[in-house]
Each structure stands twice: as C-alpha cells, then as structure tokens.
Length: 147
Image (cartoon, rainbow, N blue to C red; front, side, top):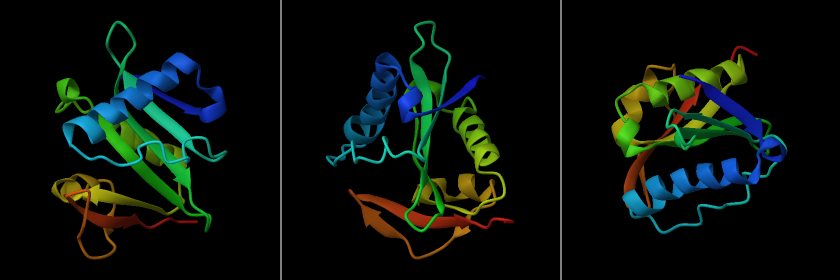
C-alpha cells in the first residue's frame, strides 16, 4: 500500500479536493457532524498531509494530517478511512507512516472512544477523561517521545 505525504504547498488542486472530499464524506456526512471541517490548519507551514489510494481513479481511501501545535508539540488528526476500505489495514499503514515522520517526538491525538485500543497498539495512552464532541465520545491520548 503506497502512502503519500505532502505539505499544503505541494498538493495540486485535484489531490487537495479528493482529500477534503474523503474527510467530509466520513466526518460530516457519515458521522453526521456539522462542524467547520475546513479549520485553517491544513495550510499551516508545519502541516503534513498523509494519504493512501488504491482506486484506479486515484481517489484516496485513507487520510490523516500531522500538525505542529503552538507549543511545538505534534498532533495527529482527521484520521479517516473510506467505508469501502475499512478492515484492510489502511489506518494501520497511515499511522505507521505518520509515526515514521514524527520519529522520536511526542505526539497527541483525540481518539474516538471505540478506537482507543487501536491507538494503544501504536504506543498511545489515555491522557485525560473521555469527553463528547459532536455527539461522539472521544479520549485524549498521548505518545511519549524520546527527544
């Protein structure tokens, strides 16, 4: 499974459109969450977009982004897999690629509660109490860094 990475300024318009469409299809439409999906963070200089595609037309089936937080920390977010690709290892491939890019730096994410065990498998642990965002239970998680 090929995993692609790019900063915002490296994305062509067609690829950006496809990535945003996948995110909207999963988070806004499928999960029925009306929220500002385009939050301004996609264009930040430190943001890395990570995705994989296997469809002949090149449409992405999985996506995540890596953000640099104001305090210098790293955050993984917007982890999305198309319904047709779930169970095929797409999220695992994306997370492995993301953690390779992050290397020994610490990292945080906000996991949907039903995915806590999945993220534990990558060395994340719960970093706070469960909360509800857009009607979906989430758990803040942290992975310690070596550096």
